[in-house]
Image 1 (tube, rainbow, N blue to C red):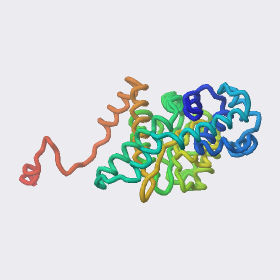
Image 2: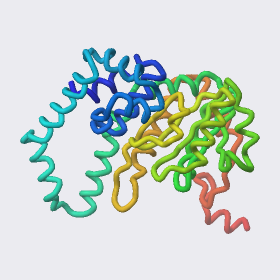
Image 3: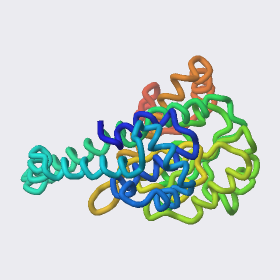
Image 4: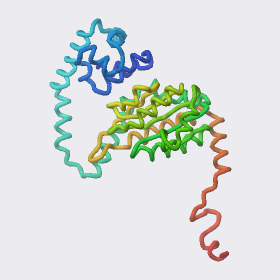
Length: 293
């Protein structure tokens, strides 16, 4: 099994410090592992002994042995006929633009199974169903819209969820109320924003659980995160959001299933309490409305 796959599969067994090393490796694989143990530790914000403990946990005798295995993987990949054929087919893609876009977006969605460790996803769901005192959701320049939608939907399954548009400004009171039983969910993708990093630091200082949803290169906010959910966003001309949307929808669905009757009752309360004026009603045809007017 490739080293990155083994790290991914065993993420749930790692200590918090070891997870930082694992995330640094996975975000820049295999290049990060070809650096010295001290350099990898610095990039992960941990210590050299932590790097060596992770290598030992993987069943590899020493860091030089770890790097030798990495080089062997790279050589195999470069010389693999399958790899060369797949790359050639990508470069000679003659499909129509729409079909090519559909194929590429489906591929991005499928990568969620290899970028998001199931143990981290499960931990995020467990935290959200543990009746947190407060849940804040914030995003960046583009992702704030996804954060807003996610917060609105999540609030229909569990209480005390707030979208935080200005976590360090107008909405800072919501951040300061988090406390040890609170959860801060932060969306931050390349090009990363300083506000996301500072928001994560603030939530961490409040004792809250910090969940960061980011790309595979990892937002600096991940340094303060308890749970990191990395998404592949490669796209042309802009980073793709399809993986983000699918991950957020998967979280909503998982939370709803995990809350059982409690979540369903919450949704019923919303249905009975929130009335949205619509241009058309199935029970009152527009023609009748005009006649009555």
